[in-house]
Image 1 (tube, helix red, strand yellow):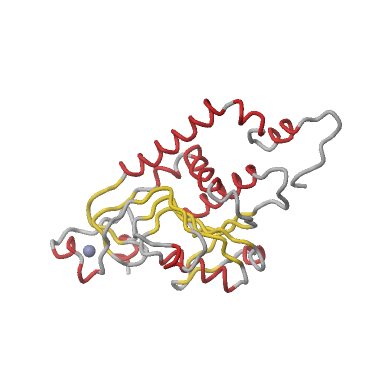
Image 2 (image 1 turned 135 degrees about the vertical axis):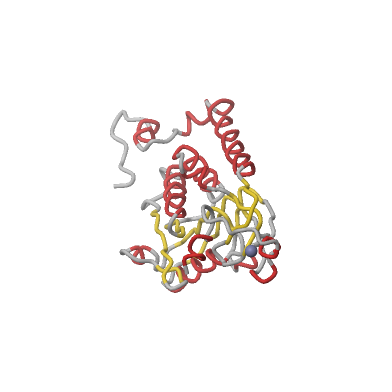
Length: 245
Ligand SMILES: [Zn+2]
């Protein structure tokens, strides 16, 4: 069971600690300490992202080229960082009802897990059943739910998460896949919006970006690094897949 009734003499804090979170009373006590520290850490992580911008010649998931790439892997290597980012996103959707958090495979799998976990913890008593996490894989340039994940979407309130929003192609693919299965999209959340994408342009009620770092991207024919003959980076982005074709 997600929430069980409190046994006699058991306090809410104990039950909450069993679930790995801070009880409301603890939260208040730690307002000036732990909570603020976490806020500072999230800020630090976002600054790390800002500092992790690599210059060169990259191919984005959309197929567009760019001369600047955000190395988001700095976050996923460290579960503590991934957790804090997930918690921050979850806190922005505290007022919404979310049944399932969906991300794009591969990195979105990690993010969806952490967001669902922290959303659940933040609504620990009044909210049940538990919020689930699911992911959509890329097959024939489409996003599809496989491995039984499609069962958790129909009729449910879905939050879509991704790390970097550039052209919005990946997120649009997810929106389409969720709608196809009869899921109701509550919103989209990303760590970085680099493409000036808006909720309106995605056709969703709410878009949250923890940080906005506008960056240019170009169709291959109009790509300045291509014109300069700079080799495509194969370590970051989709350059390796492109060159393998
Ligand atoms: Zn190029």
